[in-house]
Amino acid sequence: QQQVKQSPQSLIVQKGGIPIINCAYENTAFDYFPWYQQFPGKGPALLIAIRPDVSEKKEGRFTISFNKSAKQFSLHIMDSQPGDSATYFCAATLRGGGADGLTFGKGTHLIIQP
Amino acid sequence: DAGVIQSPRHEVTEMGQEVTLRCKPISGHNSLFWYRQTMMRGLELLIYFNNNVPIDDSGMPEDRFSAKMPNASFSTLKIQPSEPRDSAVYFCASSDTDKGNQPQHFGDGTRLSIL
Image (cartoon, helix red, strand yellow):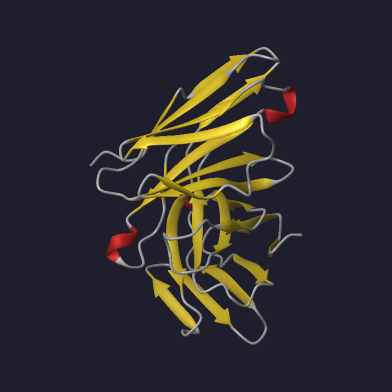
């Protein structure tokens, strides 16, 4: 049973556009929701994370929106650049960021066209 | 600043052979995680350790898989005997849970191909 559903599977956006990636979770006990960015041949790297007591978090050009009642959260990339082309994973975990294993979405392959 | 170090980066071996993947976590981190990434199943947690003790191994697919953490700076994931369906990228990650809400830091993985 997939506990974190991510969409879309792939996304192509023009430079400067705002790609939006959506995730939905099932387990209401999850209390930490990170987004990871992965480039080919590399491991996932933490981009930004949010807790369910906050509805939005912004770090640079990256924003997470969180809807606790709908059990959904999304990543927005403002002023997207070709260098943002990568695979993005949403994740969820219990007991904070590092204490438990992460449950990942299936990933979104993002291409930013120049 | 050294990150999580995994070896080997690539491994190609024949079915039935024993495979050992190695991980050196970030110094000072007390939690270590093994994940597997495939096209079909995405990123899956296999097992994780806290202070060198296995906490949850429910993600280990079969008895052919085993993991150890003999000390705070080293862990192994072993597959014996290996099968073609074990082909995947295996990631190790570490975190410092003594410092509150700290993220997991991933190595660059071992790409395993079982022929």
